[in-house]
Image (cartoon, rainbow, N blue to C red; front, side):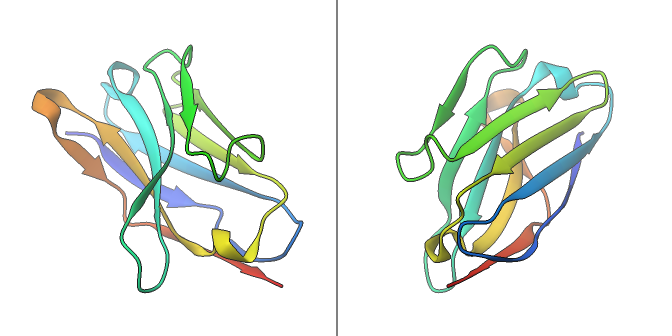
Length: 117
């Protein structure tokens, strides 16, 4: 079973940038489509971005398209989320999520991103 650990969160001013990284354990990382989700205080978790197993297809929610970039390195078992032009409404805990077998998902523990105005 893949295990996921996020890093790179922190406090940044509006308009700034952060890069989140998800480190995956196990040899099957390259088999899985990967996602980033987020959860803001008092709100439900929401989808942010997804990438296919080989990185050839990416998809973004409307609110981050053009500002965020998802990427992966299957040789290093890592998933990244480059976040530019950050807004206070991007403040949330960000989760790395693997789409594993049988329609199941494996979640990381999350990393906090706080954007000050």
